[in-house]
Amino acid sequence: MLRPPPPGEGKRGEQGYLAYLLRQAQGATRLAMERSLAELGVTSPQFVVLTMLRAYPGLSGAELARVAMLTPQTVGVIIRNLERDGAIKKTPHPIHARVLQWTVTRRGAALLDKCRRHAQAIERRLAAGLSANAQRLIRRWLAKIAADL
Image 1: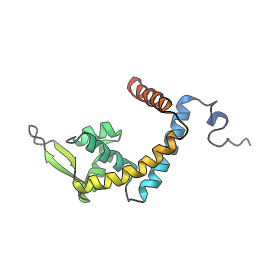
Image 2 (image 1 turned 90 degrees about the vertical axis):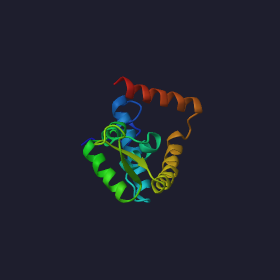
Image 3 (image 1 turned 60 degrees about the horizontal axis):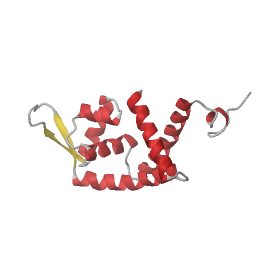
Image 4 (image 1 turned 90 degrees about the horizontal axis):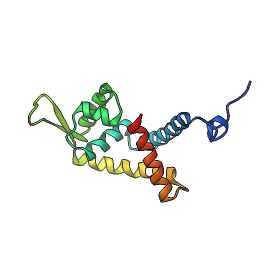
């Protein structure tokens, strides 16, 4: 029986398909992030929701689901848990009262700052050995993939 090679070799390395390599890299990054954030009692999806709410305060649950690339059901659970923990708060939309807008509280901002320190350590590992120009090119390429596909 032929055993698959470890990540970085054969079809799991430079000979692999781009889509597979992106998935493999995303999986490794997510696992590293999950392990790191677990020390704070935060999940990766919770971190994404807090990050998006700090960047774009006042998003609705549906908008959060879209920008966080999560299902509305998942975001609903995350919102309930973050609200219960005092990390986010809701206010009714000024025009559409049935729509709830979410913002990060002081407590949530402090938690997000701790999460960011963990995430930045992983970002440093991701960027290790890459020049600033290479990082810009990779960021541009990844953003273009997301926009074009």
